[in-house]
Amino acid sequence: MIKSALKSISPDFILQFFSIGHERTLKAKRNIFASFFIKGVSLLIYLALVPITINYVNATNYGIWLTLSSIIGWASFFDIGFGNGMRNRFTEAISRGEHELARVYVSTTYAILSIIIASVFGTFMIVNFWLDWSKILNADPAMADSLNVLAMVVFAFFSMQFVFKLITTILTADQKPAMAGFLLMLSSLLSLVLIILLMKFTEGNLIYLGIVMGASPVAVLLISSIWFFHKSYQKYRPSIKTVKFSYARDLMNLGIQFFIIQLSAVIIFTSSNLIISQLFGPVEVTVYNVALKYFSIPISLFIMVLTPFWSAFTEAWSKSEMGWIKRSLKGLLLIWFITAGFTVLMILIADPVYRIWVGKDIEVPFSLTFFMGIYAIIFIWNNIFAYFLNGIGKIRIQLYSSVITGVLVIPAMVYLGKMMGIKGVVIGTIIIMVMNAVWVTIQSRKIIRGTASGIWLK
Image 1: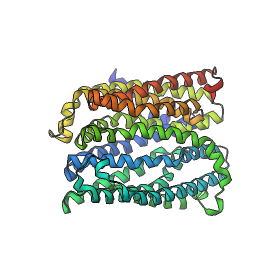
Image 2: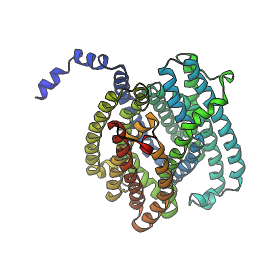
Image 3: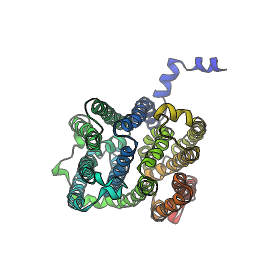
Image 4: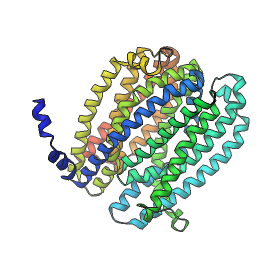
């Protein structure tokens, strides 16, 4: 049976697989195929960065770095949803051939985000003088001054990346997520090379680490932005002349809802490092993140498959092609089932993998591994339907749910963390995600079956 199956995979079969079918489906197939290689390399780099970075700055400082990065990452919610709002509007505009309108959306979004982040950066620079990062991060008080400098460095590079990363949003909106992934891979590769050089020529230094990890993506995104806007995306190149703040309302109507959803996601997925640091210390942040990064493998692989579908759903919905949407969701659920099985296998073999990967000095409890695996499975399920609902702009329930879960998640993680240890923080997140899993599934099914009405259709 296996031999006959292999024989059927002939060059002609492969050619037909990538050349025959609905154009939208073919775009998704090509992007997924390209992303497998890109994401595979990215994962190897991502996993290699963990032990190399720990060896460079030690486990305690690595935990401090992760927590500080998470806190500063909260500033991403100042996007106010404009990035995702532009993503949907850009896709709709180019699907209708309205390229000048697409350029207006691009220019206006760049202008608005530049103004926002400049204001936020200025405010942070002032406030940072009064912040004691050693207390915030539960670190050695002797590190207060260096942590203050590190915070300024990290936030400065974050602010630049905040604007320059829009090129990846445009690529994804144009159903070219593989190219966006390639840029992220280059950023990680550059970071890895530079950290190896730091290990060779310097002693462990958090400020050097912050410069390398911040400058790498900024350099790649800036160069790629210049390249694309002078080549294939020249007709969408941002210009002051095409900035129309009157279109901000159009972006904002959808964007403000994405903003609140993003804010909730930021709270849910970045507050855990700070909570663990305060409850158990920076070293435990490292333990938590080793398990998190391990299970980022199935998450990353699935998101690689899922990413092209957001904009594809937007296009299909605008053209009322429900048959294509139904077939695509069925295929994604089949892939989820396979990914869930792979994740269970990862749980069973985790201990020897940890020892090979990060050594014996960092011990990850099996209970943490188990619940992190469950977290990954539920996270992937939620994203299938969230991408569908985001793509078609039906996010009102998601908006309300985000407000509720954003309020509940931190108390849940703190309470369960104090009662059960690190695994309790993960369980708190899982409980919130299960709540979301119920409504995204119900709403998606109602919309697909044509029975959605009222709030279920908003």
